[in-house]
Image (cartoon, rainbow, N blue to C red; front, side):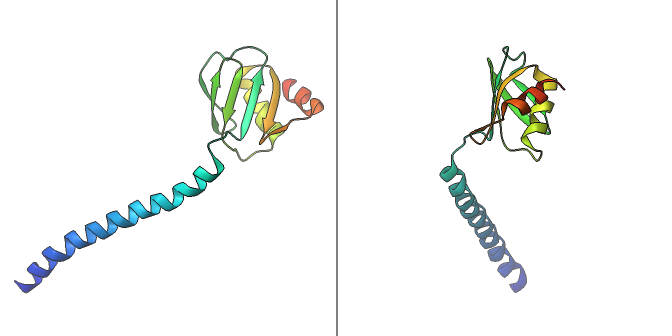
Amino acid sequence: MALSLSLSRAVPAAVVALGWTALSFGAVTATPAEARGNAPHYTVELAAPAKEARTIAGGIAWSCEGTTCVAGKGSSRPEVMCARLQREVGQIASFTTDGNALPAEKLASCNSK
């Protein structure tokens, strides 16, 4: 009887503690995201408007609106990401990684694949 009484008190306390831990962890992990903002890692200008609003290329999801596509960071070099996206959406007019434009010769190579 004493075991069931202490167990009935311990379970709600454990649930509250677990909930508090989850909430506080979420608050801690949200801070760095807020600090760096939600800016995309890749920003692409297409030669023609995208046919689809979303596409998967280079293992990441791209969001496109008109001639602009954006995505978070992938694991491949920018030249590779450019070529993979180009296969899905067509000619790319500019490809920017974290604010750095892909050089003209690499962009030409991307579009020729």
